[in-house]
Amino acid sequence: MQAQQVDVKLAGERAALSILIVDDEQGICDFLERALSKHYSVVDVASCTAQAEALRSKRLYDLLIVDINMPGQSGIDWVQNFDHNMPGVEVIFMTGFAELDNAVAAVRLGAQDFILKPFRLEQMLGAVARCFANLRLSRANYVYQQRLSHQDNNSAMIGGSAAILAINALITRVANTRSSVLIEGETGTGKELVASALHQHSARTGPFVPVNCAAIAPNLIESELFGHVKGAFTNAGKARQGLFSYADGGTLFLDEISEMPLALQGKLLRVLEESKIRPLGTDREKAVDVRIIAASNKSLAELVDKQLFRADLYYRLNILPIVLPPLRDRPEDIALLCEHFCRQLSAELALPSSRLSANDLIHLQDYSWPGNVRELRNLLERSMLLNCTPADLLQPQATQQQGSYPLNWPLNKVQQQHIEQVLSACSGNKSQAARQLGITRKTLDRKRHAMTDSLDLNTH
Image (cartoon, rainbow, N blue to C red; front, side, top):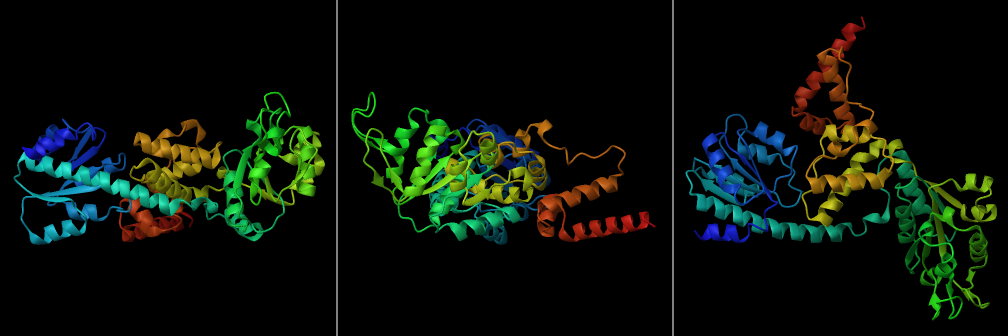
């Protein structure tokens, strides 16, 4: 009875938690589903590990209640294949056989409890309550550890494509220079990330100060950058330092510099040439040691041609140009980006990290990503909060339907295409591809060999 009281006391707090029951005994599944559904918002059941795996591919569960002895794959073998690097997935094993080997195996897999059948409802409710108490602690600890380990993750671009490797190498090479840098790229490609990495890899001890030029009213931007003295303009009741002064000894990042008024561009050029600023309302100058990194989602060269941006300032900023590619031009980086963002979001949201299947990656790689990396991160965050796959949230018309096949294709050709797409999504890793396909590595090799033989026969 005490276990029931613990459960009811915490029921409101755990209302959103989810449970998956896996047992080939339908009576046990029905009994537990009825009992646990009174306290938890999601209680699903599966009669075998194959059904359970299908459910797990669509939902992230907080607790698995698994029978050990089932036809086909045992509960222990099924759980053993999980990725236990994600935070807080609790397991309770059930069995009708009091075998020591099973108990030892369950403990090694990190099971919270090992319950013998038949059991009392209070016994199961108590075990579930302990699981969720442990879950809260493990997730809190996971969040803390992940925040520590990822607090410096913004020091480089994520990806293994040739373009990103070249950009990371360039960041390392030019970080310690005082030369100005101009970063160009579409919205969401990571311009501020690169600017921050340049600062972090430098020896500059001052702060990194980001400024969005498009977000400051044109009549206020000069005061924001250079500061002002008391009485410099209406409502200037006291002197104020500008962002150049705050960034002294560090780096000033001028994002969306294309939106800077032409009149102010000349004053910025003078600062770049003389390393001195003049606050608004005074003739006195102040020396500053600030490295300028500018960024734009528009081509400054084209704006210069249209006389919308000063040519002399453009050439002064463009000493070290860095052009960031859009995400659609580097789909091979999407898997690494997803892995990085899922870990990061898991720590921020205190939720289990999403598991992306090979099919999910195919859809993500086939999407055009108008919002680039920022859109990808937002999509992953939304999918974790809604407990669905990222591919489910993509606009159907925005993909190229890479996974669709003509209706007149023979089945073996469709199978070949799917296997090769999964292999590609797994970067050629056959073991990983086999796991995603639900077959053994040996079966994968046999199928690919058979398909190759079939192609050879068809060409003769």
